[in-house]
Length: 482
Figure (spheres, rainbow, N blue to C red):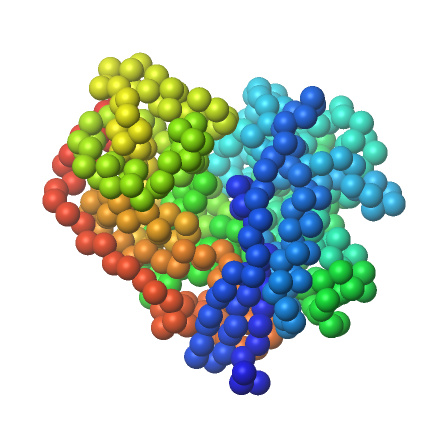
């Protein structure tokens, strides 16, 4: 292998699975391969829904062993959730899952102290019942929080276990609803008003900052030769995924697809207007001073839960049948919190259609078509709203993440938006993770240079819009009027 090519391990943890990917990067080359993939199975215990963080850490160690010798390690994961450590640095129980019910009704308590309008003006974060702020308020009287000396977001917790060093990565911190997106620092005034102790958080780190080196015990367990540095990346997986959007210029929208769909724009400053709050857009932080202005949509979670209920049928065959089902016959609001909890997803989708007076989908193919039409429609609404609210027109929509493998969803998104869709890369979060590590080691340049390398090296598929957008406008009006 050329000495100009270096290897980086990207630990990429999603809500349903984790993986360790190895990226090999050179001045004009970028290759990604999977070293190890492992399930992420939350566990329901008497006190609620919890992440099995020890199993995830075990998967990370297995993955680093399978990866072989690397020049650096980076970690990204889902947002908002955290672990609490005591004064000895010991974890105080398994982290609570964001789908746990402990935050039910908490937002209203927060708004009684800080009205929703003021909260948005201070943090720019859209309302979601599981935001870290609401989790902390819900845990205020808990024994765990009373004994906690440190709070680490999930990727920072795993990084601490690997290196023994503590930090709080900025892009993930921006999802806590405790960061001011204008200053890119903690909002001390807001935290004080809500009784949140920001001293629980470790110092902020930025993507590219060093995060320590693998501990001797980790080297022994993984078989790696030290020193192996850990590099801070965009540790919110969406931040890493947006960094890997293969865009040319600024006139693009993106949709990061997977369990969630995150649809929006990359901006240079947050949009903190009341109209933006009412439209439920969020301002999360990205690389190089950028803002990820986006809306969270329920995403392929809807289909994943249905397939689980149906006994995991073969997806390709199901999508072929869904493509033949009548278009836009029934649609649901894919951003509705009614679909947040697991269980009975086919029945809940049918109930939503029945309640809105639409034909009720019955077969798996009909329900799948309802889901994909609804997701495409939600993508359309988010892209349209973002352009209007930010006064930022776009010419193309980039779809990245696992949903790029769903050709029907990509084509329906192009049809709904009336814009070309460029799909790929599928492993965007891992690629963004790898590229930030490579940039920290001088192999690639700025964000534009990272994206140019992606365009030259990654397979991309273009979908042109078909037909008129009028049927989509009519379906959109059908949802808005419900």
